[in-house]
Image (tube, rainbow, N blue to C red):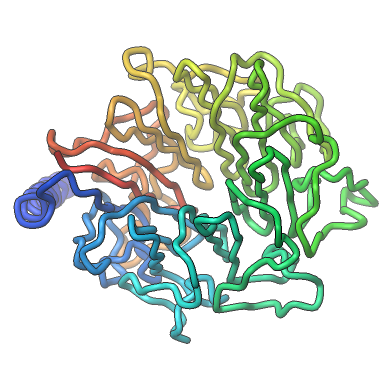
Amino acid sequence: MIVGRAVTKRSLWFVRWISVSSVELNGKQRFAALWGNGDHGRLGHGSLESQWRPNVLPSSAFDNQNLREIACGGAHSLFLTDHGRVYASGLNDYGQLGVSDDRAYITEPLGVAGLPKEIVKVSAGYHHSSAITVDGELYMWGKNTNGQLGLGKKAATVLSIPNKVECLNGVTIKIISLGFEHSIAVTDKGETLSWGGGQSGRLGHGHQSGIFGLIKSDSEYTPRLIKELEGLKVKNASAGMLHSVCISATENGSVHIFGERANKKLGFSEASNSSLPSMVDGLPYSEKAACGGYHTCVITGGGELYVWGTNENGCLGIGSTDVAHLPERVEGPFLRHSVSEVSCGWKHTAAISGGNVYTWGWGGSHGTFSVDGHSSGGQLGQGNDVDYIKPTKINFPRHVKALQVSCGFNHTGAIFEYS
């Protein structure tokens, strides 16, 4: 019965791709496909159904605009078009969709309200969202209980409409990354700012631990410069659940990490928390980083992928579920083609290599809940809900090339080009 159902879904999946391609995707148009947990409509396809294989969103969902970027959060998704417009779907319990609609969730993409300028970058956290305008202004919305929106201590704890971070007037923001309850941004000068909940030292400001490991001062309500990174021009940053990573633009492309390191989780042999940035040894010149629940991925200048962390459900992709205390290179298909993009969910990972999407880690089985005996997972897009401990290619039609990928808590989305 399981095999029969999988074959049927696979057949319907290819029909859907062929149908969308032949009708809508002429002229190298870019579009989104999503898969995994469908709770609250986070996949944007008009229902709450989970998808074990990629589900294409037609361009009509975005007023026939090309898509530039997707950002998957805790249970919501953001979509950025080539025209600089932002759409959102999914859970809206804290206003994280930014739409002029007070529904608890929305199953089809709606335009985000109150963004006055063209947007060039979006990011989705667990319950909050952000957008960078064409001239480097930062707008944020959603949950704000720990100051993760950067709007000051007097700001409301829930903001359902995008608000400009006024204290950054005159500062040009180039990069934004949202974690569980914190945010990290990089300016055009390579300066790094962080704010929000500072538990486990994930903001990098040197907060000291008190009794039972609790942080004495755990929140920053406005963006604060990470002083330990002053003079070190940063070109890439990523915020995870309890830790953060920045990559230097200097000639050695060094990787700096701060936050949760308990139980030797994040690449250091000593078991401790570190609330100040420390350089990770043993990595070649690095370009991009991604942080998950308790694992980290880094792409080097040569397109190699290095990983470390807890490796729950095989989320490191190294062929086992053993903890990696120090960076290890992911091999397999990445020995043949370099890695261009990587993203981490809570316990799953996705990467792009040679225009293909590879996934591994937690497939969703024994997940957060199930309906009628069926798992709500499928975030690996492999047609099932089982775990994979090695990178496994998702078999898309040959005429489709992956450009960008984003992992949410337990769903995944990617931008593709049809050519």
